[in-house]
Length: 218
Image (cartoon, rainbow, N blue to C red; front, top):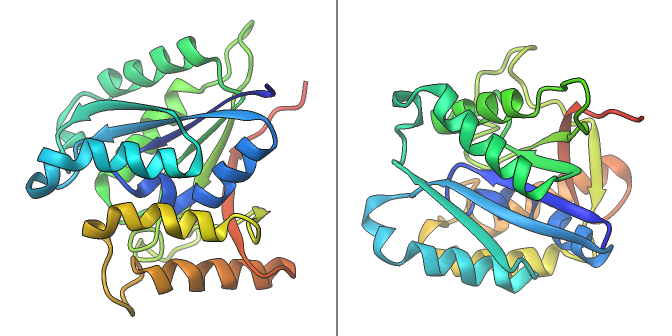
């Protein structure tokens, strides 16, 4: 095994919307992926959402899912150091080489708060192994954020997911209650079209795009 990868998402389905194809590709390459869902998701779906998350992640090969069960859309109401501590404990336990999480410019406030907590938890300290921190884009959040130079999603890292896009879409079908009809960005066609656009950027059929926050070569 090449090591552990954490995908830390605010809500159920964010983990696959942003990086499902890449996570599958990493597992195909020998990495162990662990999903962390920080908040509970929408209250009307709360009674069965945990099982939906487990089924969706299992479909692409992720066996371990951690639920932190913080209140949905209320992460800004809790002290940031509490959420940061949760993330630090996960880093200590799993010793990941890569962490994927939300972009700092997303319109969703939970996404913004979670980014700040992950950024703090992964701060480089003397004597500690550096963690590669990468932001994914979340349809119906990243593109709806403030369009300014310091808030735009700026893709700097692309992953060819041509071989894994089908598995990503299949897994998202477990989250059908969260999906919408096209032309909503969070639709099956919306996810596919974004992957096509990112793919055209690098000359492949489908891709996922990311913004690298920190990468250390030692």
